[in-house]
Length: 409
Image (cartoon, rainbow, N blue to C red):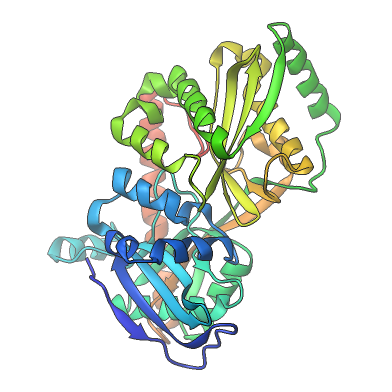
């Protein structure tokens, strides 16, 4: 594990509204979070980021790492600059640094392990876009990548869920400015919503109305969005719904393990602000039968988890709630302008949420002016590993007869 490190960024980096050259570092998460004032600066960066990735906000990432993370292996790569208000974070990326030793070198040589830092990914983290100050995205990205190149020279930096947009463009421009080869390993798209997305119409609307009539035969249907003080009750409703379904039976629901439950109650609470929490509920005669948890940052957000009462599956309460979320975003009940479904490609939510959000699995070779074929060889090795892993995963699911789920499930 790399301990705290600081260097002065060099070159013609322009940080616009911030003054002075940036400082950079790679610090273990626990040490970074304990520094006075850091958590507040981190939260401020999240909300003004070119892409405000809620999974990398301190109020989510810190409890996740403490309760369910990789122990001491997680570090924060950071860029700090001076401003009129004092030190200001302008770039941040949680990374897992490669272990040292003969066994690791052998696995890398055999193509069975990555040889460089990787943006932190976890079953509950489905966006690995770095936090880059929107007023200095490219220089912040350049300073971040340059520092990682000094810490792990000649290796591959991988970002498995890089959202396409201003942050990815800044990262690509930064890599090019540093003569670092980079390329996507793969691309995909997820369903999303915007406040002005087209409403559901045609056959899908008729299906929604038919299912709503089925549910209304059992009682009165009502929807609501909970924020602030209401979040805690919404969270507990979600936990109960999730535990009552197939995840509870499989032992994978958040409430089924003490560490998962502790994480949920710490991260998904009323005081959380970076990201903030909103919970959509569908009630039948006052009793929750479906719930969705959203993580909000800046004017955007992502749907973290969904659950519904399987006793009413014929009326599709989860689909009904997804349709309500679209209405709530449009009318302002849900305090955001856009929402990432966080669902795997092909998920049924694609029929209700019409936007498509581009992502890529990105690789940056931390070796300036490396021979052109080196990156291609490394990517080919990754492709072989991913194919083998996917084959084994499909076989295991067949053997265990488990459902394929998205991160939001």
